[in-house]
Image (tube, rainbow, N blue to C red):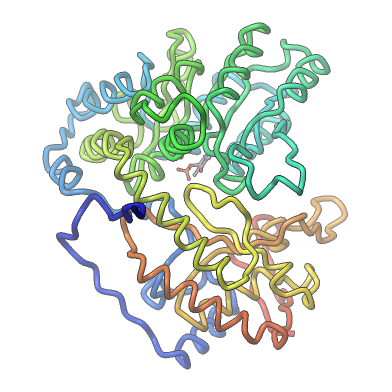
Length: 458
Ligand SMILES: *Cc1c(COP(=O)(O)O)cnc(C)c1O
């Protein structure tokens, strides 16, 4: 008997029309945008895979929760609903809302990180690293090294290497380490998950040294799905049980609700320790707002609470992650190289292997992104030399090891037919891949150049 195919556990109640421009129009639009996909008007994009952040589709439950939002400045019932949901799902008694994930980092780190501190973790997300370095502290990457030969089939590439973590603690001393940050799933590493065993082992090391463990939890539900489906002993547990166990190993969490809470804006900090919570409240009030809304409206908190319950349902996650896998398979079946295994929220096309004739300093992943827009109206994002930016001292280019085009899939937004268009677009480029040349930058900002850089074809 063949395996039952999957289908989304929802049907569509409202649609947002999309318009496909002609190929000639798209070629003109991307040229007018100086070959920077950030400069395109969203309306001119047919399938927008720029990010999965804040781009998900809310359910009827979430929309009706919006209407029930309580906009009281203090003690709103929408805050209480959000707090109770987080306490029930993750087990943390203290919850502080913030307007998005980086704001949660700003508030928590203001209360806990000082100059000279060391924060070990697994390839910290860029805003996380930014908030650490802004405080003149250092993020130390302790992600496991995966040998090339088994890389494609490794189930948990987001894991922290326990020996590296122990060595880091031995080198700097626990007094300099205010926390360890474990990112689930590891975004920087391509949405790669962390195993329950690793969470448990990292927690044991932290406990032994008296160092708090914080989860950067933007995609915690997707991580729980990978634990349930890939790790021994979890097949018969519900996602909510897996989530509960995951967070039982943490002292706190920061959350970008724009990802796995399936809302368009929002975030929070959740903690076990009352003293840390109180220290955070002071900064929360200055930066975000009173402790029961922190930069969010009551209705957004209500929708967030509903979203957390929905994203921790197995059927939702199965359809979500199967769609990402589906796109990955369409692309690899064409012989096009991607990062494997596919992560939870995006496919990363290997642009160096796609265009071996284009040196990294001519931005092959940017070339691929431009070409995919021209061929199919699809917008991805370059994760390569443009993003890596220049060395701040020497101002030289610093090409990263991987040169990737990220195709991030918004939650509950596109169908598998859309995924076929994406793969078809890549196929058009693949078939004439030798004909492509690089780009050069004609203008760039002194930092974070990728958002605004202007390009010309070579
Ligand atoms: C998106 C993200 C953040 C930052 O959250 P924002 O809501 O974009 O501010 C932090 N960490 C991880 C892992 C993320 O994916």
